[in-house]
Amino acid sequence: MNGPSRDSDSPGFRDAARWYASKDRPKPVRDRFAKLARLRELGVEPYGHAFDRSHDLRSVFAAFEEAEAATGAAADEATDGAADGEGPPELGGVRVAGRILSYRNLGGSAFAHIGDRDGRLQIHLRRNLLGDEGSALMDLLDLGDWVGVEGTLFRTRRGEVTVRAESLHLLTKTLRPLPFGKEEVGEDGRRVVHSGFKDPASRYRQRYADLAVNPEVREVFRIRARVVTELRRWLDARGFLEVETPILQPLYGGALARPFSTYHHRLDRKMFLRIADELYLKRLIVGNLDRVYEIGHDFRNEGIDRTHNPEFTMLELYSAFADYEEVMELTEMMLGDVAREVMGTTRFEYDGTVVDLAAPWTRIRWDDAFLEATGLDPRRAAEEELRALAKETGRADADELSRVQLLDTLFSDRVEGRITDPVFVYGHPIEMSPLAKPMRGEPEYAERFEVIVCGFELVNAFSELNDPAEQWNRFAAQQRLREAGDQEAMEIDEDYVRALEYGLPPTGGFGLGVDRLVMLFTGQTSIRDVVLFPILRPEEGRS
Image 1 (cartoon, rainbow, N blue to C red):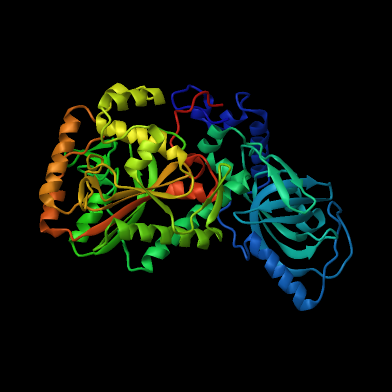
Image 2: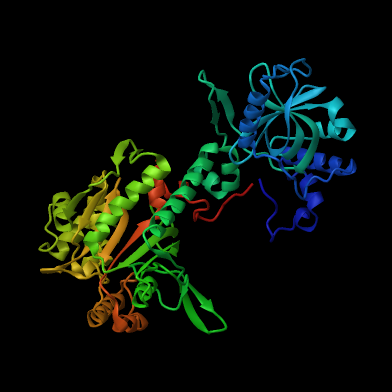
């Protein structure tokens, strides 16, 4: 259900009142709009400006129990569903607000539950306490409406803390019914909500409704916020400086990916949304900011699947005087510490498998992992062998891929899915790593590692290349690949080479997929379930 499109000739586009009252609208919407009109006839403003709360709903319970303990009284008031009852005095006065989650109008009184971000509280409405306006309002409420209540707290005979409302304020009248599901209370007293909002695409598209009716979805995003907070706190405590680098860039780089492009009219130049933070962060190391990090959004114009969204969140950090071995140790320590702080454990069940982030993690050479999974030695296999294997794996574009792309896609398709516990896969072929230093004693390999866990890449890290002449040669090789048709290859970034000419000290750096870390912590198998507003196909058949 939704309003008319802008290219329609509907009456709603010209006049909202006529649109909401028309038979083109679903009956629940028409009924709620009629209540809205009746509220205004009564002089009740259905869209409030503010409400001064004394408590959020979670803190009400602690305040009530503290008051009970102080007085030694335990209220034994009206049974749920009853309008009247005698008992000990009520405890404490409160002003609370929330969305109506349940509503039972019993005539002379009503019981309802209201909810906010973290809590749920019962309210008891009595017509003889609320007066004429409050009594009229009781008949015009619907599930989903936002209300404010002022009153006293008591405990029902069933033990439920409840507000006896002395005043009732409508804060927002909803016109569209939320997709509430069935609610059950188990033998252990826990409330279980079976959502009526099951279609994944609708949930992602209407995340506001998804959050409103599914407490477990709100919990995922609370955990996400804590993950970001703890990553930041961990790095700050170790002397890393949080910085911000450009999202809109004249030249993209730092990864092998196709960018999104736009145009700056005043400067008369094409611009790009960044695909990585790397090249700007390393410029800051050149500028003597020797430990830096950024948590921010990157954008890659690529496919969408369970671990890829075109807009995603990365943590990138760079530490002067470190190499990839030191960054491995930092990675184990940081992710283990953050897991314990946020989740209370390093062990998680993900897609039916138990995963443990406690150090130490297994280390395996890239070549060895590739050979074990594919049966091909990546250094000796002919390009046509790699291409044939890619076709066998199901890559429809195998004929269009370069050798480097074949190695990369085969590793993703054949190797990563075999790995469950966190593994450092290190020593990638140097041609796959245009920003990494060559491995000491083995220049055909890079001082690079990836962390693979639960079948996906979580971290990518290097000993950073700091030789400006060699970096120019690597960029030039990328440019040749680009001219040959590889749209993910890099261009030559002359300003970055100039920065290297001023001197980049030995540096270790890494990039962590924050969305994927949250997936691991929360057991979500699709990145769309940890991104508030994921990118989706255009909506069709809106109703």
